[in-house]
Image 1: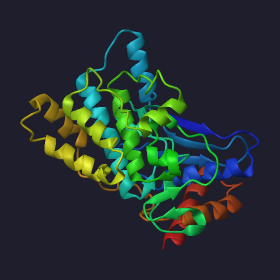
Image 2 (image 1 turned 60 degrees about the vertical axis):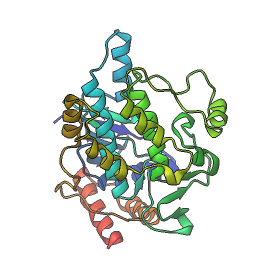
Image 3 (image 1 turned 90 degrees about the horizontal axis):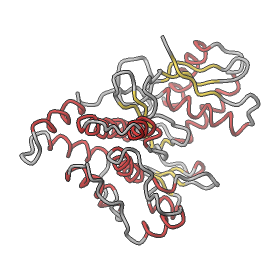
Length: 316
């Protein structure tokens, strides 16, 4: 089996090590066709690494840009299916009470069959339970320390108040749709980050990509609603996509692509992964602390077994 690895630096500090285990444990909670799969963790010796399924066709951003550089264009069917696949993966994260916080085309991988898989959970947080000590409230994570923020993909309320929810992920999803339908052009490419912050805050929105169907741009516009309560969540987006399967306004070809990309109703794959719906960031932090104490000399198999046991005890 071919695999990919996300490698930690040879001499990580405690913060880097904690971030590494945060991401590994987060990925260990997930099992969905539109989420990249964790295969193992290497903790013996250096470098440490998260081992994942190999997605042969790289990330969506580079794939679309490479096509553009060759004066080629992805098919409308592929673009539609990619947008739906990302929405399915993000609906799954929402149902698992996880906020991604860094959704962008660069963080979506393409497997051998060109199916999309959301990846890179380094900034992700569980928001399933309230815990003031960990800056987590039901459905919301508030960032209290400095970090690099992907301004062009980040919602106004997250930029302004450092508050992240599933609705702020939806804003980012709208930007991903725009990337998909523009061959991965840079959002607001004529503006600086500071200008983006100011212009978006006063109502500016990205224009409709020339190739995008009207119903796709409608999803983008709804995703960019300034009023968070009017912005759909991913469950609503998927529900609306299902309604499009019978819409008289869409071609039969579009409806067939959407129906195929939506696939079966979301449910956890029976892969032995730990169901941790609602496990808070506070609990994840406890798991990481316990895990870091015992993982240094473990084999990959031991690491996964121990991680599952700690997660079960913490979540139970």
